[in-house]
Image (cartoon, rainbow, N blue to C red):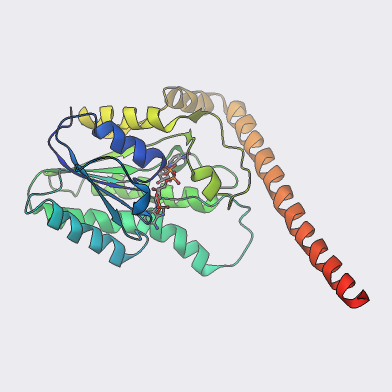
Length: 280
Ligand SMILES: NC(=O)c1ccc[n+]([C@@H]2O[C@H](COP(=O)([O-])OP(=O)(O)OC[C@H]3O[C@@H](n4cnc5c(N)ncnc54)[C@H](OP(=O)(O)O)[C@@H]3O)[C@@H](O)[C@H]2O)c1
C-alpha cells in the first residue's frame, strides 16, 4: 500500500504515466507532482495533483522539476519518483542525423540517468524509491525500433550497475511493459498507422501492476503475465523467436511501404500543381 507519500510522476498526461497516477490516487493522502510538456492536459484530479510543464529531454527541464518538487513538498522529500516520460521512433534506420539520434537518447536515457543523480542528492540520506519505465524492448529489440531499443537497453545496463553502487536509502524498481495502447504508437510513426508488436495491454492494467509491484518493493516488474513465459519459450525454442521477429519485420516492411507511397503521393501532387501552373 502506497499512501501519504510525496510522489513525482513524469509523463503523467497520458498512457502509462497517467494510469500509474490514477492508481496512486486510489490510496489515501498521496500528493503527486505530475510532469509533462503539456500540463494543461492534466485536469480534474483535485488538490492532490499538481500539474507541471517542463521539457524532460533537457537538463533545465529536469532541474526545474526538482526545484518545483522542493517547493510543493515544502521541505519534505520525494518518497517515490516515477521516471516514466519517454517516446519511440518507429522507422527503418538508414539515415545520418546526429541531432535525431541525440534527441531520443536525451529523453529516454540521458534525462533518466541525470534524474538518478539529482534524486540521490535530493534525498541526502532519506529513504526514496526511483521507478524506471524501461520496456520489454530493453531486453529484446525488434525491427523498426533500433534507436528506441538502444535507449532502453542503455537503461537496463545503467540500473544493473548502479544498484551495486547505490546507498541503501535509495531503492530502484524497473518496469518492463509490452506493447501498451497509448499515444506511443501515434508518436512513433509520426501519426501514421503502426502495427504494435504482440501482445498488447491496456495502460490501466500496466498502472495497476506497477503500483502493486512497487508496493511490494519489487526490483523488476513485468506487467504482462505472458511476457516471462514467452521469453523462456523463445530461448528454449529459437524457431519461435525467429517467427516472432519475422512477423515484426513484415510490420516494418508494410509501414515503410506506406511512408514511401505517402511521399510519392506528395511528389505527384507537386508535379501536378507545377504542370497546371505552367500550362495556365
Ligand atoms: N506504450 C508502449 O507500448 C510502451 C511499452 C514499453 C514501455 N513504454 C514506455 O512507457 C513510457 C510512457 O509511454 P506511453 O506508452 O505512456 O506513451 P504516451 O502515452 O505517449 O505518454 C508519454 C508521456 O511522456 C510525456 N513526454 C513526452 N516527451 C516529453 C518531454 N520531452 N518532456 C516531458 N514529458 C514528455 C508525454 O506528455 P507531453 O506530450 O505532454 O510532454 C506523455 O505524458 C515511455 O518511457 C515508453 O518508452 C511504452
